[in-house]
Image 1 (tube, rainbow, N blue to C red):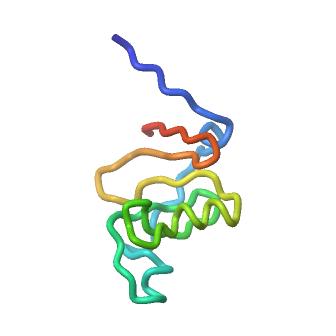
Image 2 (image 1 turned 90 degrees about the horizontal axis):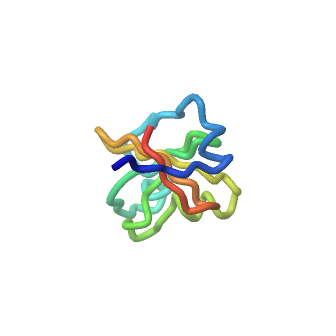
Amino acid sequence: MAVTIKKCEHLKAITEFKKAETNACEECLKIGSQWVHLRTCQSCGVTLCCDSSPQQHASKHAKSLKHPVIISAEPNERWMWCYEHELMTIY
């Protein structure tokens, strides 16, 4: 059975990926906090912590700056998430 993955205009617009330049949450480093997993914003390239992390910097960043799409910055993970439409796709 084939699986259909929906894509919104934000996910469709990503043709080149901004990759993490660091293996740390830039905001957690500033405040001495821990993170669980990392995500990279596809609008500006900043790498921040995921929603499983105490500070949830990636979600806060997306909401405050209206940067809708992140990709996982974790090794061997190839997926994108649109915060606005709550859609995920594998790339």
